[in-house]
Image (cartoon, rainbow, N blue to C red):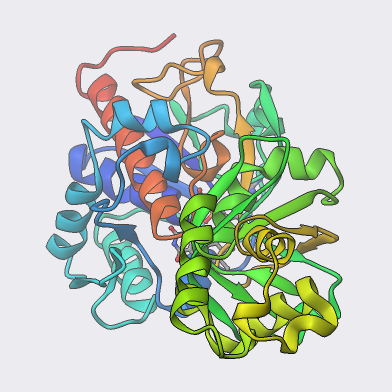
Length: 395
Ligand SMILES: Cc1cc2nc3c(=O)[nH]c(=O)nc-3n(C[C@H](O)[C@H](O)[C@H](O)COP(=O)(O)OP(=O)(O)OC[C@H]3O[C@@H](n4cnc5c(N)ncnc54)[C@H](O)[C@@H]3O)c2cc1C
């Protein structure tokens, strides 16, 4: 008897799972059910239309930094299929890749359609049936299938009856109501640290000032680490920025050295840590008011301390969350304690598998979310094909 597999969701995880299953078990009957007219819609828009499909992981020292949720599960699954395997897989399937200086991996064509076309061609070649405009609302609709894989992305897992961690947004930018700050839009600080006072959430990296507040990798990472706290506080929380990523004593020392070297110069004219001049002007004016026009030698001890504080602990109030158009994921999904962590099937319903963003696994920007989709989908295809080959019934 040919085994039948239903894949619910025609996104990145669904297609990766379908193609791998057919490669491992060509005799298997695989059908993808997609609720919308179009498959792989997120792949198309991903990475600004270029699809940042994985990462070299060269800068990753701790998986928790890039996967705030699901890092333990992924550490285990990466032994089976990691970023190197993904890189090799795509190249083997005709998608030439390139690794950027920032470790992000893109198709050499710089076009997400290269990946979409490959998936569609592979699915066709293997005879995967694709049923679009076919929303699955209950598992009852799939009772004729031997195995069911749920790859429905963020926020749509309730129909399976498997425990779910409430989904909330991750990877967004902060709205900050400070007109003088917003006037600096376009300013980038290469090495800033953003944190939420009173919590352990902190993230380092480039920070971009926008016309609505703050964005850039440091802010996006922070939004991911603090996704649930921010949601629970209705996106109204304090924010502290260290514009230098240096410690307070180092900042004091740098300012003292400027006083010694440039006593006659105006404070605004000599920028510590090579900060962008518009930002330095803003910080000096905010901190010293009318005395911003003073010379460095006239800076008194109190003012020196206030300037140091403005550099390493500059306080703002997050006033809301703004969309980040390049990437957006949900934090939450299928509770990992409800599934078997090697095979990703439900403990209570062994023929039911999960892969991709539907799981309570999510990463920061940089190709980590697609990598989680490839890895989990691959592991599900392995688990199903091993069972099918051995003709073992999961029931
Ligand atoms: C704008 C944007 C840009 C992004 N860029 C990147 C990037 O460059 N790099 C990166 O790593 N990540 C990126 N991401 C995140 C990445 O797209 C997701 O992590 C990834 O798509 C998850 O894949 P998935 O297959 O699990 O879910 P999805 O890609 O969301 O696919 C799920 C599919 O299931 C379908 N579906 C849902 N419910 C049902 C149902 N009941 N019945 C049938 N079908 C259903 C949906 O219509 C959808 O097609 C981006 C996300 C966005 C929104």
